[in-house]
Image 1 (cartoon, rainbow, N blue to C red):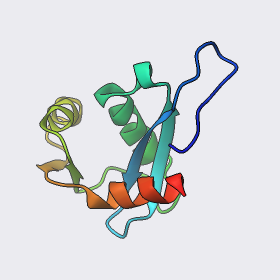
Image 2: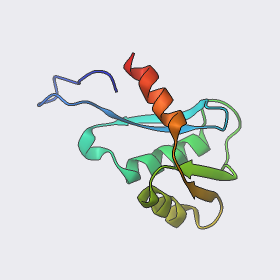
Image 3: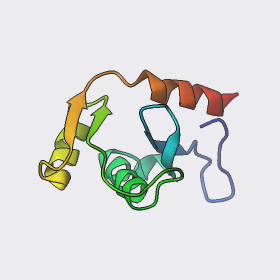
Length: 102
């Protein structure tokens, strides 16, 4: 994320968790303090995106692609086989992150 948050103790750079659809449209996003970011925050953002996406109908996707095995494992535990999970690069996320920096 581009800026630092001040006024809440020590300044920090917020971290974002994003979920995109296959066309690269943001379905959901959450912002956390660095200490609160991680796989649990991304999974929470996934559930919020599935329940109430910014665009399109609610519901689980047929598959997701994530960049880390630890996130894939966490999602697999939560989803219990209801969604196919692929571990592969996620350049779409990098493009959105870059657009937030400018």
